Image (tube, rainbow, N blue to C red; front, side):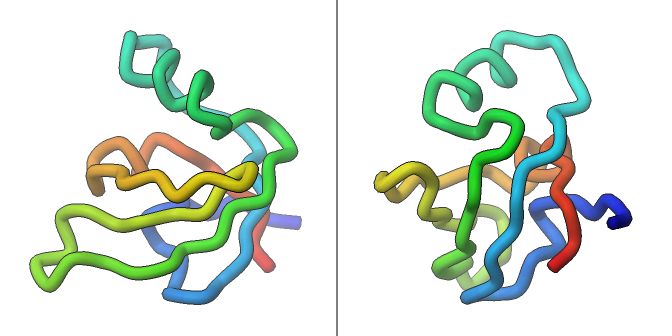
Amino acid sequence: MSSALLSEAGCGEIRTVSHIDDTSDTVRRLCDMGFTEGARVIKLFSSPSGGISAYLVRGSVIAVRRGDAERIFTDEP
């Protein structure tokens, strides 16, 4: 499978996290919220501006900024 950014997922698409490309505190928070390797993520919807999207991960709905979602790599469906 090839890699794609989580930010590129369409609404309703299911992706699996392959890795996060950063070591900042933001990444640590994303991992704490469930964005870890192997986690299944569903993009639920995006804001009209596209700056924030909501994802269902490990039973919780999490709002993620586009810049942070661009650091999360997933396996393409």
